[in-house]
Length: 209
Image (cartoon, rainbow, N blue to C red):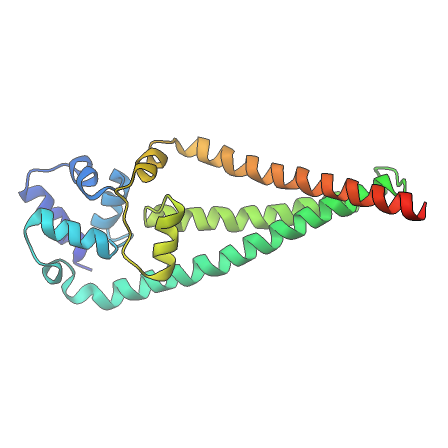
C-alpha cells in the first residue's frame, strides 16, 4: 500500500504535523497516524480534502490502492451492519429477560435464588450486546465516525461531512466518558424493561390473581 506513504510525504513536504493536518481534514490525530501507517484508509470526503490541501489529484494519492481500499471499507461496512443487528437484537432480549425476571418475582412470588437463572441469562445477553457494541466502536474509531449522520453516511457509502458543530463537540468528549455513557444507556434500557415487566405483571396479577 502506498497511500500512507503519499500522505506522509505530502504532509512533511508541506511542513505540517499530524495535528495540523488532522485539524484541516476534521479528523483526529490518531486517524492521520492510522492512514499513514496503512491501518485504515481515508473516505471520499477526506481524500478530496487531502488533495485540496496538498494541491494534488485524488488519483495521485490512491493510485493502485483503490481496489484494496474498496475491499477493506466494504468489509468494515458489512461487519458494522451485522454487528448493529446483533447488538439491537440482544439488547431487546436483555430487556425482555429483565421483564421476565420482574414477572417471576412480582407475580409468581419466586424467591431471588429461584429467579437467579433469569438474571444470569440477562447478564449474558447484555454481555453479548456490549461485545458487539465494542466491536462497532472499534470500527467507528478506525474510520473516525462520531455522529449518527457520519455513521449513516458511511453505512450508505456516501461522502462523510465531519465539519459540523456536533461532530466537533463529540470529538472533544474523552473516550472514557463515551464508554460510561454507553453503559449508562444500557442500564437505563434494563431499568425500563424491568419497570414495564413490573407494570405488566401487576396488571396480570390483578386480572387473574
